[in-house]
Length: 591
Image (cartoon, rainbow, N blue to C red; front, side):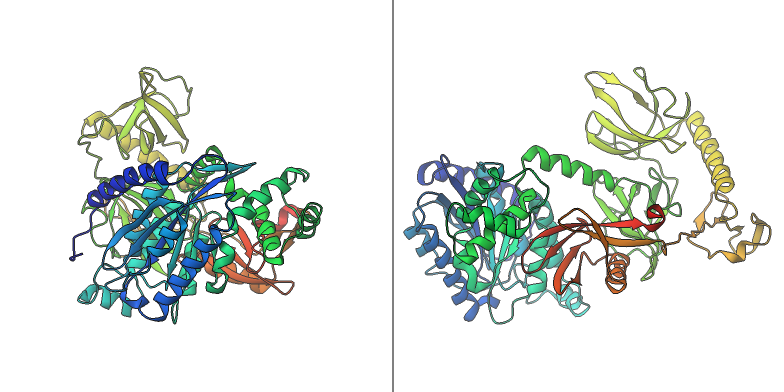
């Protein structure tokens, strides 16, 4: 393939076309009745895989396919995608294992390593295939990536920008691939098999951690992976005979398995792992519930030193994100789960986190408040629009009283919106749902609307000053001189935070005096009791959260290594793959 300009429309069409082809091929050459699974293999054919990488990739792939052929009780439907100089499907869905095994015989390694585009094309296999159910296990299409874990664009040989960023430790291709994995991995497990002379285990490990049920497969254990579906079926049968509990010990699982049949040690380990990680095989409705719950977290207000949800913003003095903002304004939609980060949805529709404040590792302000109203174009309503009570309002004084104006900060559907009111209340409302309108739009240029917004802003500022005193520091003019001391000479006791420019050119400081000494991170044991992490592990977790870019931390408990996932609030045993919950506990509540 010649170097092309990658765009969303091109890949959307390509994915749709391949999904149609693979749906047809699955019906003709595969089987989706009885006991079956679907697997998409994504093979790295970039220049970096030449030699040892290519040989190991072929060996691992053929070993798995050969193992599939040994248990005909399960129909293993296989699709194969390659990514290198070209990204293409080289084998549509089939369970003809001889043909599948031969499809890699003549491949050659050349070009870049466009992993993100390869993962995207793999979704055509997900769209084409229904998922299977084994007891309470809902088994969706698996993506198995065999690579050295060194993604690039299609051709980065002459890409000076990528070369420069790489010298700074910034790999845009990796970030793009991880973003795609996060979207897919919520629903479909992603497995990685590292191959080559020096595969990037850290990056590939991060990828599988971002997916439910994913796993890093050592090259030498590839054949064992060919038995994974067989062991899922066995795990489902074992689970039916076990008591209903949240967690099972490995000894209990092994004891239950031994009652019916004798397994090889590795099969037994797989069964224990699958049962321990069964939450990854839950129903689509449960996954959707979890997704909605996680999304709600992104829209919370956590930090009083940050602009409220609904605040209009523009790029600030420390902006470094090129044209992510479309060179326009946006709306604060939530305070990030990572300290010092704030979530903004730009008027273009793109929502991303940005730095706002100091978290111990940086002191930066990518955005700053502005008074630029949201201008609707082809939308009936949009994030950032101003609203007030409509003709079908039935929610009492949630808005703080008739006449108050709120800001739309989220559109769940085109007819269900979320609004933040000046009193701090937030909730969802109908805007056209079944022809009902709880709220109506306000014209941001209407003098009456402007006057209401001004009065609401003044009332909010006075209330904040009253509630947070004496933690509120001082008001300064643009030269930094004190205009009014709100704390009777005690403002020097509090460190100044972000300066928020007011309409009159003044700056307003807020201060935080949170105490973390009474809080500690804990992990949950099999008997559901909670135990404190050691001081060193606690510090490692806190440092990871403070850094913002760190998503996992390694800890050691009772001579066992665990990888703590800071986003999912779980820890995974690096050897047994058993999963435990973690939490941040306020010790004062235990006293």
